[in-house]
Image (cartoon, rainbow, N blue to C red; front, side):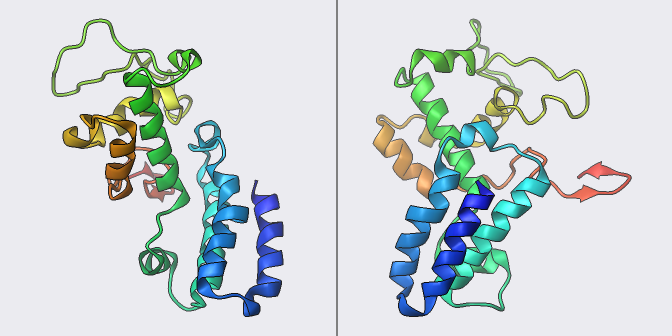
Length: 194
């Protein structure tokens, strides 16, 4: 994905001087960001090295669009009103969970999300069946393991949206600030993820 997106980004860079910021944005969304919006459930919890490649491509797109070559990535996201690719992937996962819980997703999604039969509302409330990973790393970044944690971060008023369209609309302004995945945590050598 990164290789294809880089090729499109190089082509955009060559014609960048002839385009307005709005045209830049349209081309970036259609030809570059679309690579990362296609099937993100498969790769969304990739390792930090791969996510860094994706963020570099996204940052270069924002620099070309805004014609800003001095601010850092987080400032560029604020100036453009955009969110990171990882945040977009989390929102996509929340949409899939909402669709599953409301009977709007295909039957095959029941292999990924299997709900508990007896649900008790406790402090560590999990709506999905999860199996605990057998090691410190293997299985921690799978969708079946992270779904509960991420869904519990969504505010209750958003979860109770009557329609998928209203849920998507509410999700636009939501940011997952305390994501538990290793991509969102800081890694310190000899200590691990903080």
